[in-house]
Figure 1 (cartoon, rainbow, N blue to C red):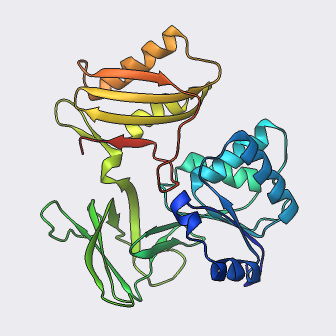
Figure 2 (cartoon, rainbow, N blue to C red):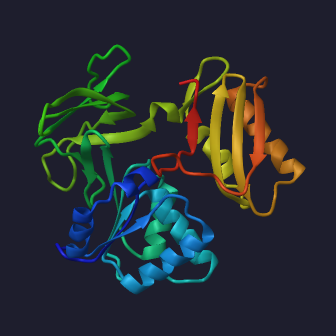
Length: 301
């Protein structure tokens, strides 16, 4: 990749898109960057984006992993190949990247997928190298992992990610709580770079669910139950309280009684037999106000 290579960016909530000023549009034109708004991606809009990508033939893709997966799925469903566009890399950020998403994007565009971790207030915090290491941009950022009391944890221990940013224009962020959970690496990366590593990023604290008995588990414990069902096109799990969880599903065809019962049984096995599991089949699951997609939301965490 080089400066001036054509880039397609799938990004932005309605608020951010309204903030695109004339200077930004001129910069994007000079850098050959095309913005494809990632909010409210209807079938018609997805078809238009696929057409644009085939016409633009960008060298790099940048955006939410969920947005790139939606484009990949739409293209596959309509037998439109995207693997001959000449894309060199798909850079994803702003959401947790699941391995299934990485595989889908890589297969659809025939390119490697590079993950990035950052925050709206802290900027980019870490980037993934070709060897898979998530390198912290330690030249101007200090990343700590702390426990519930704010005390630093040693490398390898999982806790809250806090960031001190020393290169802000006005005043440095000191121990800014990102709301994410992760751990620092315990060994150097095979690539040879000396920058410290984030060993893993497990997601936001609200991506974790709490069972009736107090057990805290990652949302993946429930995601796997619905994601593998062939008729499920989209999902969102919302833990409203310890005794009620809603499951929003976009299905084609619709669920039969046996599948519904299996979902309820699987959720109750993890959350508690007395938990009310409400399955709601919907036509579409809207993005958050930020333009991102949240697959698990806990209002208990």
